[in-house]
Length: 172
Image 1 (cartoon, rainbow, N blue to C red):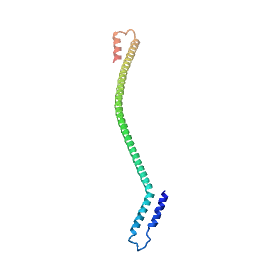
Image 2: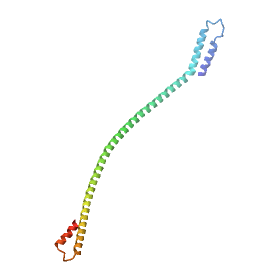
Image 3: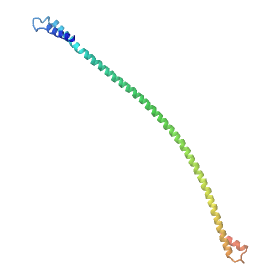
Image 4: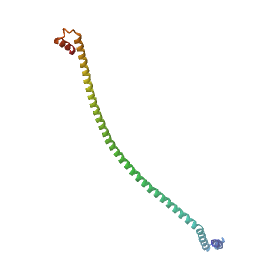
């Protein structure tokens, strides 16, 4: 059907075309107008549908791309919102961690100080015991030396006065 229509349009173009005579120059406008309308109709018939399809598909692809961009924009906005929520959660966790570490630090510091105080008291008691032990040891050695000196002297001069002199020598 379309071939027949195209054939008829082509034939009418030849039939209505001007012969190029100069004597018919005034009536030539009607044939040219009809010829132009036939040509425009033929072009419209041949080009209109593919052009409409092209522009419709192009509009649809632009709309699809726009929708994809909007979807990505929404997805990016939601990811940004999630990231900001995670950042705020991380900041809160960091603040809580700092507070708990300060508390743990205080507890550990207090326990170390308590242990140090207990160790110092133990060392003081131990030192007192050692001092007392050394004093007894010194007293024993003085007593032993005094007794040895007293026993080494003769028995006849061993009286209270001699004993007092020996003890006074050792103490001084």
